[in-house]
Length: 300
Length: 227
Image 1 (tube, chains in turn cyan, brown):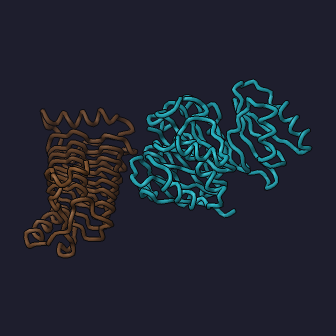
Image 2: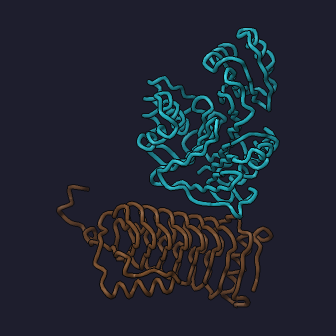
Image 3: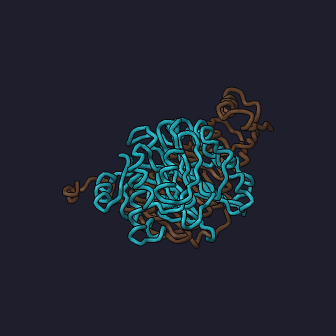
């Protein structure tokens, strides 16, 4: 069992409150996932010729300034960065393809949690309330956010095994359920050049989407293929640079509820996670249909 | 009338107060406010009470109900009225999956849509859904009636025993051993009575009836190679 939650703002005036609106949603899903929690927040977008990476080092006192200096020197490009607990967000005027191998070489112990123009992924082992506090989630701003509270079933309780999993630039996925063909699929995807950090089944779903998108699929097409190729139970919430998507498997054992008002679209494993949202009493609330893709996107 | 605010009292306290009405009934009318999707509201009742839940409820609402009349003014999560024995449960909004699962008796009315597996393994309950039902509804249904005024999803009535299924709209597909059957006068009469009890205005003649082909009841030696 796990809990998943998502909040996509239609009303830009609420962007400064995104973290504050989302924090109680994440905490409400503690019963479904007390092992670890994480979220992917979208906002504070960099220009098209810049890249934003979320990096993590196991040592909270790691000196990010040194890494920033090396990047600045090697790329002869401006670098902006800030740290938040064990995580740092780096913004560099270059591409992810150039920057990620450089970081892997210069600081092999640094893990790249996300790459893109907008996405930041933050996740840790522990109770959702503690993780929200660790990263000061209530103070965060942005356009949309998806989160996960994990009750681990098929792989270890580690930061690496926590959700969300990034699936390529500005794309990430959270998963409630379990996949039964992930080992075979992981091998096939590895042959296609997709890298995996863990034994986690959800990371395979993320890697699968990355692979389909590299094949030229739109997000919708990639998810249509996922319905055929992924065997098991799943409710997915997927974040993209300008939108978010929800999809359940055809059997639809794993719960999901959606709510929509003029101001936002919200998704959660259980309605309890939506009760603190403004205007929820009069929101349209419904259960997403099995094997049906729901997508909300804002204009670029 | 007694009002219980679930933001001030716990579900456990509410349910205990409702269960206490079995030994000595001091209050017949109950109102539950601010449920905020809590699970297990008004479960295991065994007294002729009316309970009005004002808002959305979570999982297993009104489970195992006996005698009580429970109305939810909102949506409910999975397993509403599961294993109900008697009484009436009415949902003004939508119900998630497995509504009325294994229920033995009473009446479950869902005024919105029901999700997947509505009436799974039902054993005598009457279920009336004003909207649609999801896939695998009435799976292994043994006894009772399922009335769907909207459409039914895939594999309706799979491995069905003796539930009478009435659907007004389309059926995406029938499950194994479920077939369309003739609507005879006694079925029109049975359906009229069900719609009447549920307070739903529909023309019984507009419905089709589905039931068991009774081909999966017993082991057939011809099928031995399939095992």
